[in-house]
Length: 192
Image 1 (cartoon, rainbow, N blue to C red):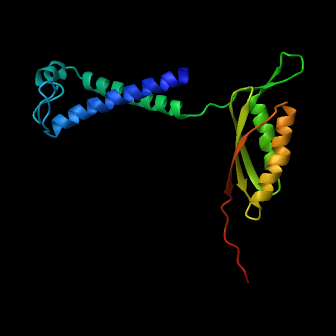
Image 2: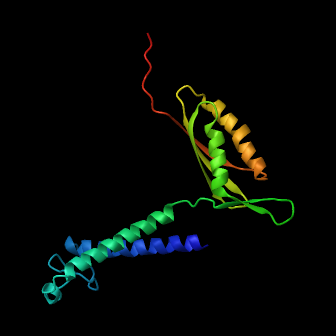
Image 3: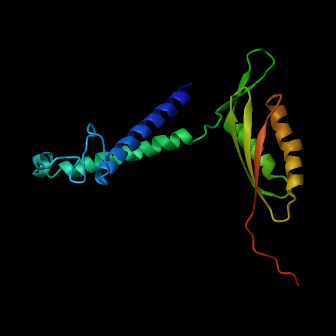
């Protein structure tokens, strides 16, 4: 719920900024604007000459304004990127049989799953990220495949071995996974 509200507020803030920028741009391009529009034409300015002259003697004013605006833009971009980032699962709930359950660190399960997937034949490197809820995690796996590897065999062994071991050791009924395969860049081999 909080994530949805956060994204709605971000969207509204972006809409306000786009509308404000559009109003300035419309006036600057000399487009016909309604009478209630805050700026009327090409000769109209955002800050009047009297306002600019009031601060002209202060050498700190314009650098401060520009620095504050730069900080606001950087913070807004950071906030936007934070909203788009998928959160990793911090812990997985393991059924311990006593009704309470135990917590397994998500990074630990990711590391073990990545090590086992990376040890499969034809896999150069594996990266694993757990997402979802702690009672029903999901895995995102990236495999970097060697040039000689057969992707169908590697994917089958990943499903039958590494994912099955992780699912069984964590006591999960299922562990859905999204697997992305990519080939190692290598030089072409010469055939004589």
